[in-house]
Amino acid sequence: MAVVFIPTLLRDLTGGRDAVEVQGANARQVIEELERACPGIRARLLDGERLRPNIRIAVDGRIAPLGLVERVSPASEVHFVVGIAGGLGPP
View 1: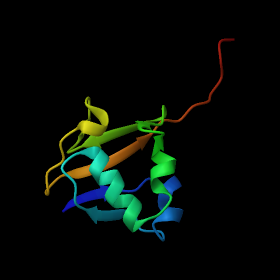
View 2: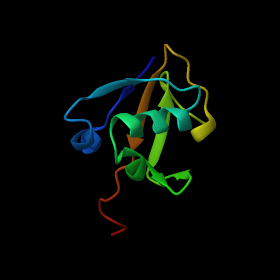
View 3: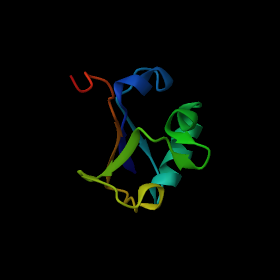
């Protein structure tokens, strides 16, 4: 099963776990399996049927250019990368 590393901001949905093992042939299926194991996580990752604008998926150490259809193998490591906004604007 793929190992999904959970960002700190989503660990309230995983009982504090920083990683969850799930099955899935692509990123969408991984999210659906995560939802079964950790209800509410889909709504935090997806906006309808798309990834939220501030979320990226990394599979095996690289940002997944195909997003939700990116292939995931049983030995994959999956990370959800949450963008951070803020800072000072132009002076």
